[in-house]
Image 1 (cartoon, rainbow over the protein chains, first blue to last red):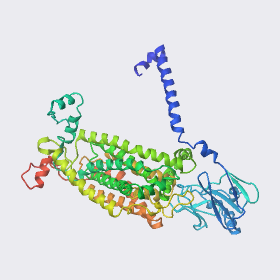
Image 2 (image 1 turned 180 degrees about the vertical axis):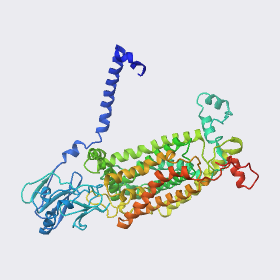
Image 3 (image 1 turned 120 degrees about the horizontal axis):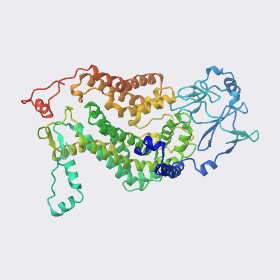
Image 4 (image 1 turned 90 degrees about the horizontal axis):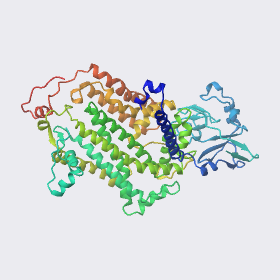
Length: 176
Length: 418
């Protein structure tokens, strides 16, 4: 290709140069079209995507308890928070937080905290009612979360994610 | 060094075949007439041991795949089935699981030997880099193999390692979903890991082929780090000398392997992996297999997620750059007193990191891991480049033959200073 693109050729491209580049471009598109399905087949498939939401009866969860439900193959924590846990979360100054978010931004009803139970460090499942903030503590690398699921200590960079959810009634919540 | 073979087939059929496909000549020049430095020690037997382990893992692995079911619902039970019902299934599985550890034990000795004797220096840089590629492929194969029994530690390991990719800014989340084929490690993940676990050993075979090819172009390094100057004086033929020595070393190594398989087959396995994977619970104390512990300790030593992951990657990637990080022209640590000291400090750092990686996180272990991780990186990027400039090396023997004869206390040619 180098010799075809001498300065004279660039100033005066001929038919052969055009065909050369056009053929190459079509070839590149063709290779891309063949490779993409081979890559995309690894993405979550239609049956996985179809399992995107669940409904949970929360009526039986007593105050202070954390229930773990399975959503999209992983855990979601539903925590019925006590007055003290809510107050601790609300009264934490934002300046103490690594990933600043108010408690109000993370809940729809203060007594119910619903978060994805996957540590934002490397994906382990944190243990409830542990760590110095009585929120969660990750057994893998020691990240500590508070009663709002916010990261307080350790290597995790972000708060526990809040999934999309809606209260269908006082005792029923739809996640996803 | 190569091309010394003067192989002539004895039979007419052999000559007919050789003139059409000279494969016997290739084997003869590579494994029979191939000149081996006459001063190499048993540390040079680990290439042959590794070749054996690779074949052993492939053979036992193919057999296990005949009985294993790569499905999240059935994988764990299929391992139980192999252990209890399949004829000699217990033996084949224990050979395979302990074989992985033996493979890594041999590869670490092989790598530290290369480091100690400067086997990565010109003209063996490509040989060394191919070795690093083999090592990376081995860790990938071992990691995916560890996931297949679908125990709780398999699941946690798969989760932690694939989550390393979530540290990538912007696209990290999409990359991990792509790796999982879902929103978490699950059935699709297990299936693709099985597929790749079957593929990787054959890729390793390919790179080992290149590794051996590169080795046979440059010839082997040796404990004195002096290149072969006179094939007659400095070398012996591969067969019978190296062949018999390798077989003996392999036999001794197999005693250790057999001891693990028959007497303590579960010593290196984690009890938590005898509990089936549950995506909703992570075992209380997560540890990788012993051969990955030093890297795990480096990951945990760093409080920032992205930096931790980068450090983990750099700890392995830097190995490929050692040929250029080490600025000294002298190969063997035998003639490099300062290097020899720092080499052992580096070994202590690696073993110390391995120990810390197996312990639960505390302020003390984190601090110690930081110090040792600093030692690990400092050796590679500070000590190696600096030593070449300041170290006063010892006089080197003029040739391999001189080194051997001097050791024997016989008359030898005068040494020349490096």
